[in-house]
Length: 494
Ligand SMILES: *Cc1c(COP(=O)(O)O)cnc(C)c1O
Image 1 (cartoon, rainbow, N blue to C red):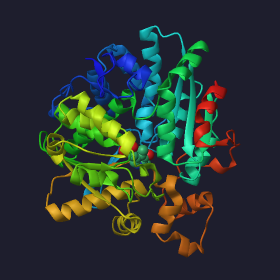
Image 2 (image 1 turned 135 degrees about the vertical axis):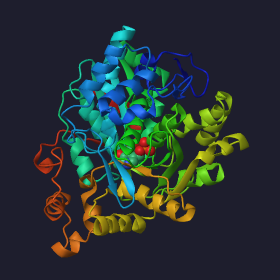
Image 3 (image 1 turned 120 degrees about the horizontal axis):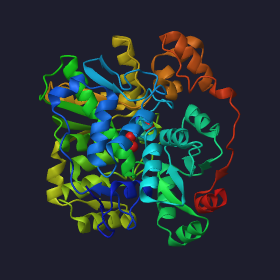
Image 4 (image 1 turned 30 degrees about the vertical axis):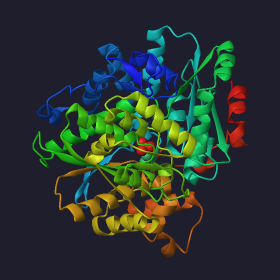
């Protein structure tokens, strides 16, 4: 299987080369030339553990890797660093099934892909005979940054540079990043939002002069954002696994359909579910949930993508995004691989901040259902779920749950639904404490780390090890920069 650029002006390459490059030379994203079929029967899934499913699914996409190479990567990635032995527990609460993707070392679902990406990348480097050092350039809305730092810290032959919006992440997220250890780690706060960070990173990627200067130093840039196909493919595995758990629990019979609801920002996670569906996993409806920055909800409803709108900082900061990168991959697929069309749409987005898709693409959006949650609706969802079912959701997951509830009420569709549960509630402790009324009882606490402890006392759920004692760790990364200093920051870090 080969990988081609969504914009069509880059040669087709094997997956190892696509993973090393991150972004194609024409600024497009790598997509597989075909989506493989599900490498197992749905009847087999209930007997397979997470690692077994991941090996098969990832192997089906990255078939230039040997079986041994894939198996090694999977075993090194999904091990004791995860707090849950089954890696991804599926929990039934409030009429839905929560696919708990947050038990990795940094307490967000980004660990699912970023604990394996370093292994895939270092293997790819060996396979391709790559001599240069790989520098991972990452823009983060909060969770990718820490998960990437954790995954790549002290990995030989790599450097990692992370840019996060100084004012746009939670206190816990910020501490996680600026206390990161490892001689090859570099972290910068930027005076801008996630879209600024992502745009800056993409600009550095496509700057030929930078590429030449770095080449002189023996450095090549790559990406740990979900623009890298090496991040996206490992995410397909957990939908396949989750389906098997529903069969094992007797919720569905093998072969019967499920729905999937995903709290969406950069469209990576839900695109992985779409790929799972294309492989043949019986998914009926893909529920795309936005927060108040509801550019995707509007797009799915109207076919018009309009990024020119007010930007809101919300309590689900990892979804505060107006330019959703991975949508480009969906457009490419729905346009039947017409890269000319994708290129035109992306140019319109860059120049006018807006585009409208063709009737053909619009028709393809029918498999998606979308909705959004206002801030008070998100808090209310957390509160009701905790009060009525004793289950604690984080704010991102709550957005998806709220949109799922709306859908269920309006459609009367009783199909069992997997909700992608993307972060530990402890990562956004202040908002969660607010939702379950902790603040009032305790007389109001502003320090997020104190809240963490109180939340744990109240709910009886232990604080994840990566978040415990975070406030006493030494700060190693203190730099804050302007948006237009990102390029300089990269060059001086290397
Ligand atoms: C990144 C993130 C999201 C959004 O995922 P996308 O793949 O960007 O759509 C949702 N929730 C949490 C907690 C995240 O970290």
